[in-house]
Length: 115
Image (tube, rainbow, N blue to C red; front, side, top):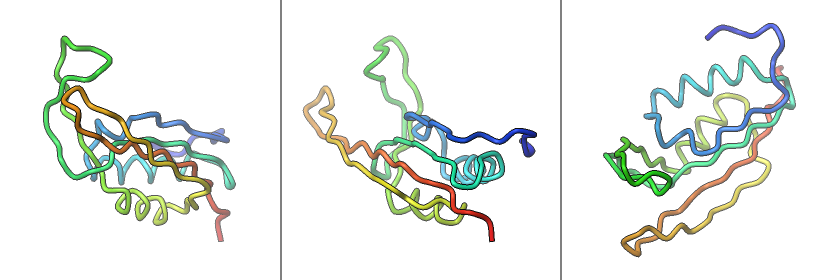
């Protein structure tokens, strides 16, 4: 993806990261950096952890999807490398069907101005 003629003021990635590996996320954030205005906002959410594999999602019990969990510090580093400053961050507990708890991470970041 090249640079758009009219960059975005804000981009929302609501649980898109669980379907991307680390290299794909690196590429995604490079493209977001090119296609968002200075001081533009980025909302993203993902599941914290380091596991990956096929799972049955809560929104559709008839399919299995390959899911990636990501370490919060890795995502923070990728954001930093791509000129994003975290403005607000939340951690929410999500109770899985088996009773285990998954940490959902929500981040609001703002792209810093180019030097």
